[in-house]
Length: 148
Image (cartoon, rainbow, N blue to C red; front, side):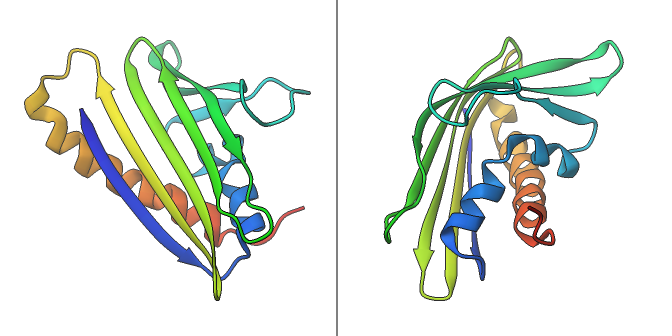
């Protein structure tokens, strides 16, 4: 299993960093060849299932994820989100924690990935690529101008 961790300090308050990193559809703006669909009208939280579709036309795969833990930051307490990847190609889990910090917030994103049919010796390559890609996603989400 490929494992990687990304940390980022942001001047944004924890509640705003949380809002941005758990706005699943916005992730797609920073992922090449990927779109993310979240069922409309369902409040964010435990049980939310969304799908990242990566590919071009019929050539691609779905990466469905389910939120299994959801605790937004409040009153100086960290926000904790856990996702389970339930796809036929990508399996694993992710955690996104948002801690209040003296000058904003501290975001910690950890991914544990397994790609079916990828031999274990490919985990190091997958970790390196995942770290670069998800660092770009996290930077983009936290650096975007404030949107309502």
